[in-house]
Length: 253
Image (cartoon, rainbow, N blue to C red; front, side, top):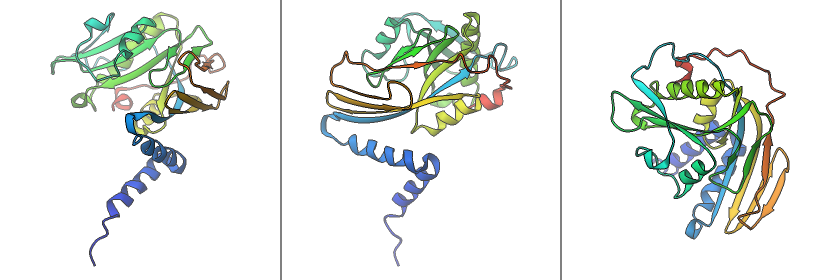
């Protein structure tokens, strides 16, 4: 009997169920179907919001000195990196974002980047604003490591420098959103000792956008670019400084 041609598909479905769980797997299937709409007019996003403690001191314990992490203050000075939607990087800088760029002595070009926004964030992918209720909070986004550098110390060095920058500013918690479909990123953040802050699902069809979230305003419907829901995150009730044993081993991707 010939092997079933459906086996690879079934194996992929089983792997997705194991990795994401049935609920997020179902949402991912809907997202993939919406991607087939002509003109990419429809899309679905599911986000997990987390808070991560800002840990002072060295995370690498002296290792990774060949990886330099420096701030890049202008879009024109950014080295070639991952492709982003036109205007996104310009908008980040307009909001006052700081980009930390990692460069490795062993390889040319940019090894990775991490973006910091001190006072909340305007979302890149959907119409949403993230506000921070505590002055001891910041926002981080778009942590990226070049594929050849993954599994090394670039990720750890980026966070080491980000922690130093934020701690010097009096920040004790940095918040971020992660795709619920990206289990690798969720796991990497979990190893850093994150606290869950909530979830949100966004469905976009043409000019219409629908949001359902686990935090106020819970539900929002809009069709205008200026009609933007604001989700507020308050870290003041979290432990002042959790006990974290951050090492290069757990920070590796």
